[in-house]
Length: 118
Image (tube, one colour):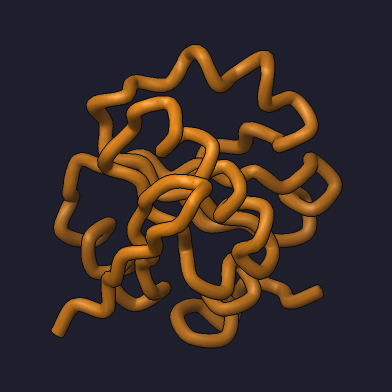
């Protein structure tokens, strides 16, 4: 059973996806992009295979390169920074946005315990 649900508020609308659902979608080969908005130092500690690093500190540099029609999952350490990115992009017209619930920490705990927790 999917564990995706909507978040709506003044900041915009996006979906939240559980680590398990993301893993299933990645294994199925669904056309989605996984973007990690943590900083390089954090990415070196722990990462989800296949996720692309686009640090939040450089958001103005990369935000305009994203396809507003693409299905994109954003992640960070616990899901707070990535939720801010989702909210901002939702206000800009993106409609296929997902925030990884609990971030890399939840991924490590629930999906792949070989990913270090920090």
